[in-house]
Length: 219
Image (cartoon, rainbow, N blue to C red):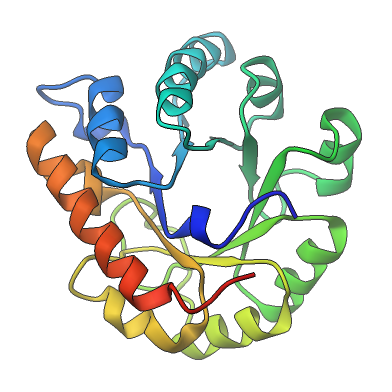
């Protein structure tokens, strides 16, 4: 396992639709300043060349803060920018194949919505799981809802850390306290907060609350 529960307390996922007055790089810097512990660069609408350029720029920022950079669903970009890891959907890529071409010292995260899928991902070599959507979310409207009981069952069924994702906010995250998740993954709760100062404050509040709720769960 290449990642700890502590590194997954506050998992931020980027979304350029919130870049109105500030650049994504500046928003990321503000979020990391506020306490984000791991960052996923998600670029669904970029070609590989532009995605790689963005990843190289973001890697410089995450390295400065000593925070792992995860690339969403693009193995080539992840390898070329020397990211710390990659996150893939259950059906997007084979974890074993990623390990073969990238080695054992990189982080691989996998999305899972069932106990069976979670156990299989762990068996294949995943380092952590992203489970959700826990609540309604505008970021991925096609994502099926996962119940709190299913989240708990997944956390109990695997030995690798689990991150809850999907519509999580400062106000509703308390509902996840007894799930045995390692932390939360958020998009709009950070990047839709407003200007850079507001993004930093939102990150700080989420980090503090996440530490309070999930600090007892270590793997």
